[in-house]
Image 1: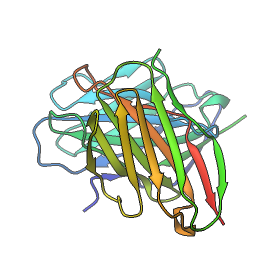
Image 2: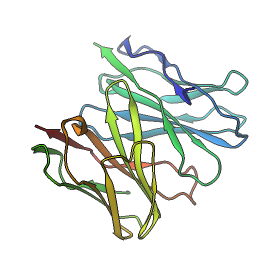
Image 3: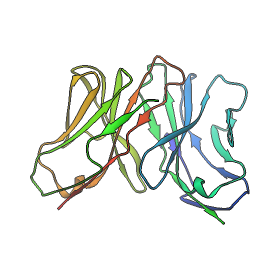
Image 4: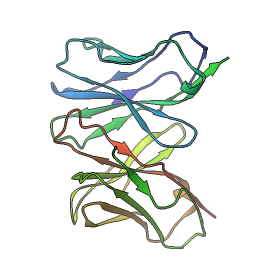
Length: 115
Length: 114
């Protein structure tokens, strides 16, 4: 079974609108972390936001928020007030356990912001 | 800011050639990783290193080897390049003792094997 599932290969959003990128995960661990990365066409993966499995509040970082629904095992990324510079690939990732080195990545969602 | 530098952004090699991809990080991180990225497959772990001279195989180690002689440097080696190794290669480092323990990535090395 896939550890991280991103079901939206491509998404379009109008500039200044909000967009939600879906991510579901599969783990039997109690302790895990969820991450979102942005990859512009330049290639570098940029860390956006993190949610720990024990965090009760949804994580927020500027225009990014993570809609964490633990029972449903979903960790959707919400980008508010989209900008042209948000056009990129977005990857959801999970780190299992406490050792820190076991990461699983989804297949990514390509977001295009339309002027 | 953490800086992860990959030696080559673009490489073109011939089948059978030996290929070295080098990665250097400047933040004294213990953990370093090599991933391969292909469209529709996401990132797949090739090798992981948690200390100098220490390494662990990832999900797709076949055809690859690694070297970590110094803490800041992690090299990926393709002993005999093949066309199915044409891909984007991403190096990452991690301070696993620091929350949240995110991976810091280099800009990637796009390898084409002819």
